[in-house]
Image 1 (cartoon, rainbow, N blue to C red):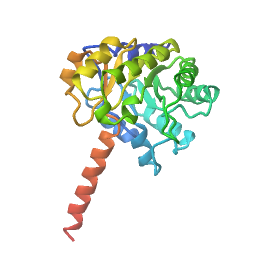
Image 2: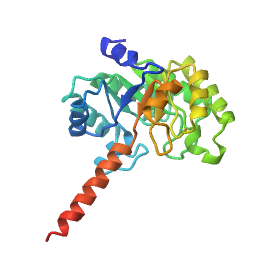
Image 3: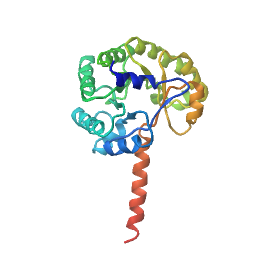
Image 4: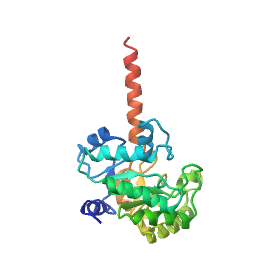
Length: 248
């Protein structure tokens, strides 16, 4: 583990979470770096859309890596990249793809346990094998468990947390360093998750999610904003452009 990867890992403190306001290109990386951010994280949605693609690994890997290199060229902060499901149809290919991000200079990756094409969860053992291949690169692996994404909100309950924890145990054994659980919003469930997880927990800011200060009190170690910053920026751009057109 390199010094920069260790520095990044040490920022994952339950109760004092790392804040990652996700970016999509070198310009947005510079903007966030200038705020006093401790690390930079891409969001796959924003990156793909900014380059004319849709989320779901439709963006070619080489394009994602070239974008990563441009981001790395403008900041010395640790940079972690959202690699979706790892860009590989097998653990071996995932390992090769993640190794390319490591060679470029990334300190970590997100890797989800859902097939980006079918949106079906991988079996736990299959997901763990992919994580193991990614972890062999030495990067900080933020293993994303997508049970809350694919499950209707009215079924978000303690049993679903238990199911996530079972996956988390397998991912930890495979070498994952943190656990990302998007779309969980109930404070009680988040607390249960943080107390039971073998890995520091990453929560996605979304409508209905407790504010960062409360998330810290619940034991969260990492807070990220996903595609929210991209969507907000594009909405503002569209509104400003529309206002400008009315001045003709």
